[in-house]
Amino acid sequence: MDRKSNNGIDFDLEAELIKIAAEGVAKRHGLELKRIISIYERCPDFGFIAPVLVPFESNLDRAIAIMGKERALQLFESEDLYKLAERVSLVDDINLSSDLPLYSLDELASVTDDFMEYLLNNRMHLLNTGFPSAGFNQSPWLHYQLSNLYHLKFPMGIEGPPREDQARLKGARDRLFELKLAILKELLRSIKTATFANLWEKCLRLLTEAFSAEEAEFFLEIDRLFFIGYDIKDEGSADEIPGLDRAGGLTDLLEAIGHYEKELVVGTFTSTRDALGELLKFDEMNGPRLSVRNYFEAVDYPLRDVLDSALDLFSSFESKERDFWEKYKNRINHALQNEFYEEVVTRVKIKRPMAHLFEPQMKTFSALFKSHLETTGKLPRVFIQNSEKTEDHDEYVFHKENDFWTLIYEGRKSPGLKDEDGLHYIAYLLARPNERIRVFRVYHLDKFESGSSADYIKKMSKKELDKENLKISWLDDAGGAIDPKAVAQYLDRLKDLREKYDQADIGRKKIIAREIQEIDDELNSSLGPDGCIRADADPNERARSTVTNSIRRSRNKIKLIDENLWRHLLRIKTGRYCSYTPEKPIPWKI
Image (cartoon, rainbow, N blue to C red; front, side, top):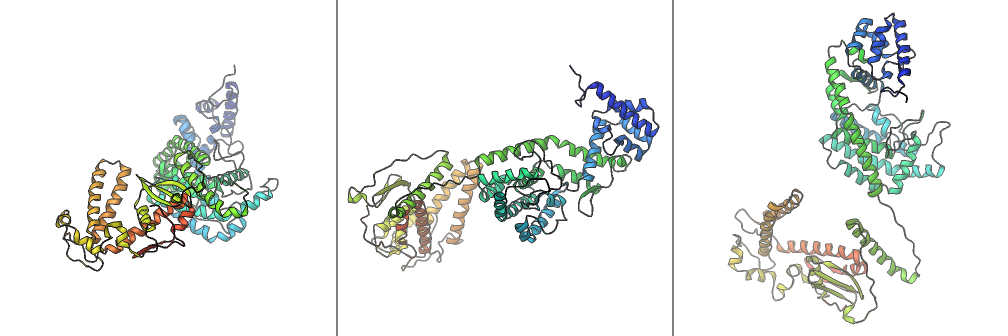
């Protein structure tokens, strides 16, 4: 069996390579060969000592050129060479990478804000060509990552998308542009507030609203043409194609979302930037630059400890970075499989005279099936009932049975609706066609058949009024400026909500607290400081608002199950007076 070193190189071969590299350094600088070999044998990574930067120049050569022979040898003999190699590499990466996003959170927020304005200024050029009219100088990283918009300029010898796909990309630029701005807005808000809660969910909602699952897969497939063997959904890193600018497409946008969230969660670049402090500057192209050209210049630098601490901090994030990106790619895959929408188109031929009946029913069933499936994960059970009309009283039914309402219109029975106030108001009006009824009477249903709203208020006993320490300070017989019953109901509801609040979990408490606040606001607008009902608290207006909104909500629910019935119920008008005016008499069973 072949013996392998930690570098995966055969031991005998590695020894020979070390000897050759050591002989080169010793010969070039007149050094003792044995001493050089001793140093090289300590190095865990042969690449660190191999002459890779320029021909016949290793990192030891670089150190000797800057520090002198003896000082460089002492450094390589005394330091942890694994740690030294790591620090040398990081300094080179920072100084040689013009597009490294080494920003604090404030700096990242600032360049993001400027970049959004830059995109708006270049909108027409981007939509027409896929390129901006000028570069974004404030951040090479953002310019490199997101400034393009599916350009189609491929280098000679590199095959671009087929012609039909090119036309599709051009047609999608407008939507992608708006999506990019909307997501950048969410990212900027999160960076400014330094919070990442629900950031992915918000961005995913924007993505799924903009593109279907098929469109997302299409863009990711196109993005693979811009890289060598890279797919954001899989493991691996992006290898660029020489001479080909990035697409600025869906892959680049997903990477940007991941980077912003990762900096809020892990903080690799932002923490390192803060740790470097004054050691990091930005050049004329706004690329990050350290105050030393390479690590060997920093060995005798007064702030070496600060630099070492920052570089070691950066390295310490490696495992967290790896874990984050692995989980992030899993999220992307899950979203593509489960969160994006697929457009379903079914074509059915039906005779023309029946089309106007068939189409609204199919839309209703589609909406009902979609809602049930997305809520429960299962298709609803369907029972087909003969729609032939049998008895007259079964043609039109709007009737409450226990907690559900039976709805039949033109002999067709709809799925039952759960009881709510709006259905009571509708039934009350259906039973009184072509009548002009005061809204206060509808609000209290049949309580006012024998008198006005003021008569009802006057019938309330003093005990009922004093129940919650209330008193009537003013009363208008002509139409009512108070509604003691509503106040009492509000107070009962408040008591019930406060009891539920103490037993609720955190999520439920937020909902209960919101309703408590709404009721408090309503009571504050209706009651004076002494607990009296204000003279200007008009019960007719409250009744009008309640009845109108309740009927509207119930009608919208009916629309989902029977569009024809919904259209007929538009004959109900609300306001200070309510009415139901059918085109022809209908024998409703209420």
